[in-house]
Length: 254
Ligand SMILES: Nc1ncnc2c1ncn2[C@@H]1O[C@H](COP(=O)(O)OP(=O)(O)OP(=O)(O)O)[C@@H](O)[C@H]1O
Ligand SMILES: [Mg+2]
Image (cartoon, rainbow, N blue to C red; front, side):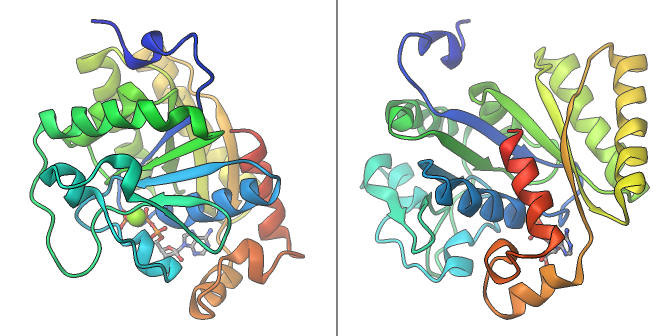
């Protein structure tokens, strides 16, 4: 089967990055937001698709009220195009769902339709982030196949490392997808981050024979939570601090 990537070789297309993790709560959404605002400030056109349909709420965190969201797209009452919502931070989002309606469980066909429509708007952006749910569910497959690569976020927590490994293994063994890269988040230090990455790298090389490059790392930082309390992103609230440099570094290596 031809992949979306092959179909789109001749058109200028955004770099599409699926943001995934084995374990939840490792920083997928907040890093995506911080990287997006960083890239937007550099003049890049960025779109975040909240593909974590159950829990996303990227829109709530940003204080925007999307008129249309993925639930309308899936119900057939809106095109994906119409669900694009600009944010005051300079990037666009497509919300998973807005308000209190629960989004129906997506079938694979519906996910494929979302991805198909997404490729038609990809020319308008430099970067598209797919914020996908933690774990090894079906959505990761559809979105990972569409993406240029999957950025797996892992933390030094041993279960986060084994769960990230499990995602990489599933993508390779069941679906022959091997283009995974790593971002280490919530590291105690650079040494801690590199040690975490090494564990994952050694396992994927030895047992899966694949190379998973490190994009970069972000340390665990109290200013991160402080910014959340101020309802700001850390790269904005604490632009002068090292945490902002680390996030900028990750964004520049994408
Ligand atoms: N580097 C960091 N330093 C301190 N706190 C962090 C850091 N990264 C993320 N957090 C905090 O960890 C929590 C989880 O982050 P976030 O919601 O982005 O994770 P997630 O992977 O999207 O979670 P979920 O799997 O539930 O979607 C948030 O409260 C966030 O502020
Ligand atoms: Mg999230």
